[in-house]
Length: 307
Length: 307
Image 1 (spheres, rainbow over the protein chains, first blue to last red):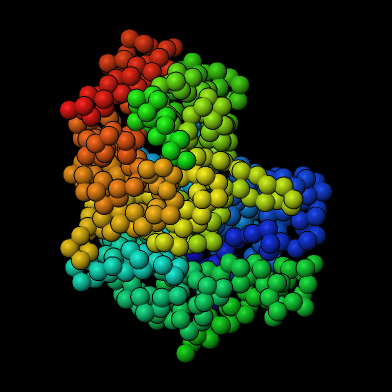
Image 2: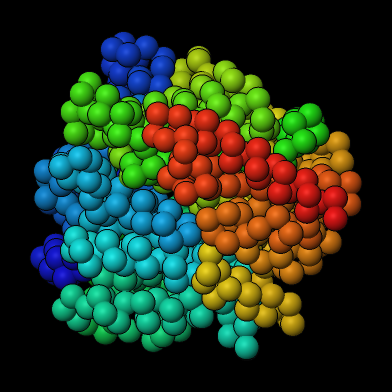
C-alpha cells in the first residue's frame, strides 16, 4: 500500500494529506440549514451536514492530493449517525480515487487489536460471507500496549495490502510527558521508533515499509533523529498549519529524494474559508477556499524541500 | 460516579465487571440462526446475534454485579451495525440498573480527545438541542499522548458526573516492552500511575477519585506498588480467568477494606457454556452458565480477600 501512496505523491507533487476533521463550527450556514431542514437539529442532522461539507471539500481537492485522513473522533462524537457519515465519507473518497488514512489511534491487547484491525483494515466473516466494514487503506495505531497490541494490525496489513502509522512522537504540547522521558539515555519515542523499524522489516512494499510512523511537525529536531532511526518508515506528519508547524519545519522528515513523509493539515484546509486570507471566497465557495489552501500548502512544502 | 460504583460493589458483594466482548464463536447456534434468518449472513445479522446474546447474559447477571464492560472493538469489527448493537447494549444495561464501563481506550491530542469525551461521556450540541450519544458511565483512556490528551476526558467527568480508567499497566504479555522500561530508576507504569494520582486529585467522589486506572491481574506485584502510588484510584483489573489471573492474584489490587478494585472477566463469564465445567447447561441455557460463572468468580474473590 505504501508504494501506491508514494506513486500518488510523485504524481501530484503534493506530499499532503487533507485532514477531514469537521467540527460544526467549520461548516457554512447554508449546509447546516439544509441538513437541519431535512433531519432536524438531531445527530442525524449534524451527520448529514458533516457529510455534505466533506463531499464539497473532497470534490474540490481530489485531483490535488494523494490522500485524506478523517479523524474518527469528530464523527464518533455524533454517535451512530456520525459514524455512518465517517463510513460514507471513506467510500466517497475511494470513489474519487483518494487513499484514506483512518485516524483511529486504536490499540489494545492482541485479540482486541485483531478485532479493530479486522474492522478498519481487514475483513470479518459472517456465516459464509465476508465483509470489509470500514476498509480504510491505512490506520493510525497507538503503541502503548507493545508488540502484541500492534502485530494484529501488521498481520491485517500483510493479508489485505494495507498500511499503518504508529504513534511515535505526537504533535501536542504535552506529548513529552511520557514520550520524551529517557530510557537508557534515549527518549521513549526513539525506543518506539526502533520498534517501528523492526515491526516494519518484513512488510516492505518497494523502498518503504507498510509500517509507518506519526511524528509531529511541531518537533522537527526529533523528526531528524527519527528519520534516521526509521529509514524504511513513511512518516505521517500532523501539526502543520493550525498547530504551529511551517514548511521549513518539515525538511527533516523527508528523505533527500523528497519522499518519506506526508504532511497533514486539517483545519488549515477544511476551514480555510474562515481565515482572513481566504475570506473573499465566502461561505458559498468554502470548497474553493480549501482548494486554494491546498495549493498554497503545496507551494510552501515544495519551496522548503528545494532549499 | 465512583461512589455509585462502590455502593453497588458493597451491595452485591461482587467487585466484578462482566466483559461484554462477544465473538461470534461464543454465541449459541440458535441465536445465530435466528439472527441470520431475520437479517441474512450480513453485518446486520452478526450485530443482531451479538445483541440477542448480550441481552440474555445481562438478564441473567444484572442482579449479581455492579457493572458491565463492553469492549467496543468487538462491535466496531462489524461496522455501523456492530456499533449500533454496542449502543443498544449500553442502553439496555442502563435499563437493567447496571453501570457501564465503555472499554474504548481512546486518547488523542486535546481537541480530538474532547470529541471522544463528548461522544462517550459527555454531550454534543446540535443547533439548540443537546445529545449524549453513547453515554457510558466510565470510559478507558490511553495515556500515551500525555496530560492534554487525558484532561478533556477528566473535564467531561466533572461536567457530567462520569469516570475514567487510565491504562497504566496492561494485562497482555508484551505490555512490558514500553510500560516496564525504567525512567530515573522507576518503570514507566509507575510514572503513569503518579500522573493518574495527580490527575485525580480534584475529581474526588467520596473516598475515591473519578480518575481510576487499569492494571492487569497478570501482574500482581506491580499491582501492589501501584495500589500505594495511587491511593485514591479505583483499579480496573482485567486479565482474570482466561488471561491467567486467579483470585489470590487479586489481593494486592484491593485496599484492606475490600474496596479499591473491580475485576473484569469476559470470556470466562460470557462463554462459560463452552467450558467443560459448565457444559451441562448446554447452548440453550448459556446465560445460566454465565450466571453460575459469576457466582463462582464472586466466591473465588471473596475467599481470596478474606485470607
